[in-house]
Length: 363
Image 1 (tube, rainbow, N blue to C red):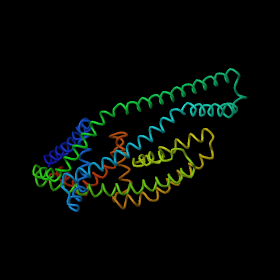
Image 2 (cartoon, rainbow, N blue to C red):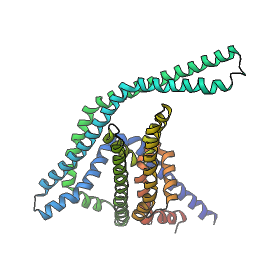
Image 3 (cartoon, one colour):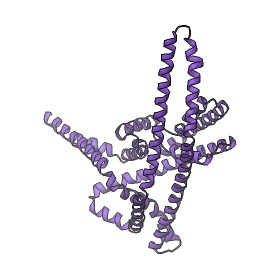
Image 4 (cartoon, rainbow, N blue to C red):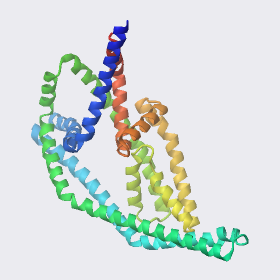
């Protein structure tokens, strides 16, 4: 009996060790092979479209692949370029106006402190104490000003750094384009080669996992697309009605952020609303708060229904998975979390966890 428990513990250590090894290998080598991962994802998307064109329009396979890959690339590059252009335009204008905004905010703080906080204790403080407090407060404002300007300088340097990596990004993009065409063209042959290399029992499990993963991924993307579109349209109507400058940029950035779990529109609107409240623009503060509240309520009403219907996962399970992704991978975990959750759910549907448990028990 004790020997059985020992071997169960050994198999448990093998499973844990394998998981940690996979984690560290991926973490420390992803910078080397992430372009290939992009190629596989794009080829996965392009293959069924190219096959449809070949079957329905009787096009040569290579021609259908080239057309499909180039159209998808043009759409992606157009969208990303438009987003970056709007982002850089808005950032440039914000950088130009930032000192004015900062000065206005600091003066508001100073006025509030002198007219409210300091006046409350004017009878309890001596003249020297008042002067000392004012001096300390002025020093705090100076430090805050320097800190804010430092953040601004770092932002400018990061923008320059992004521009500097464009030549390297172009080489990566060229590699991804050519490799996607080649992989999409040979997709069926690559699948057959992989099937021949992998043992039948393992291959059956792999196919089962990938089948569930594809179904869940498509369902998740459909659900998120519906939610983000509804949110973006609501914001576009609201911001246009309020005559907000760069409404399209704000909507695009918010829509992109809206794909991140636990983040959403609040990352854009909450700091914006707080800033308007500080500078005393109460009218726009109330209007944006109502718009943000409408979006939050609308999302809370539609998201549980759509996501649970499409994927079939309980909210508590999703929340725990998001927390673990954040703890393990940091900020990147928020981006990776949906895919990790979907992959984990696919493993569950394919009975992988049950098989691992049976391996540990020795059944």
